[in-house]
Image (cartoon, rainbow, N blue to C red; front, side, top):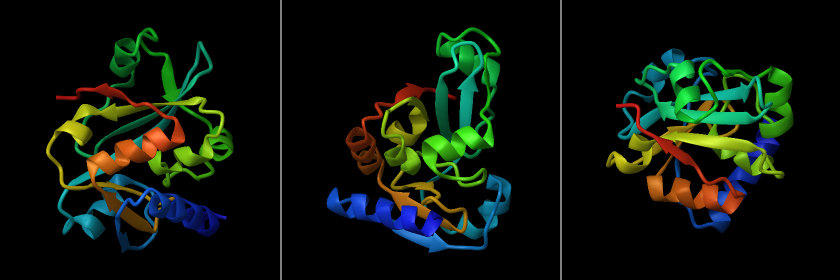
Length: 169
């Protein structure tokens, strides 16, 4: 399934004339496990969390630079959800909405969210930090795909997901 979804993703990117780089590596479950395999890449490696708002039942995808400390209570407050309302979503919700497993979470999976029910929060540094490329998993955690920040925004616009930009500085 992941290989079929990756082909679908690559087809969408090609149709949008978005040029990417892709590095294959052993399967990794955490950013820490991935870093030795992507240390040679120039740009921003990301960590991505699929979250739920326990009160409103909303779903959120949080994408930040890998070296950022993330306080979910603070993120929740800054999004106007009240403190402490964001939690990691269940694996079943992740599979239903983004069609990926834990360890493979990526904003590139938003093309699977056809009803646009997942809200995206991006670290403002990813789009405004002067990075040549941003790196995400392409539907599988055995590869890392890089694309230019403007191309990520164009892809997100195509999927109908307007990101909320938050500064983590």
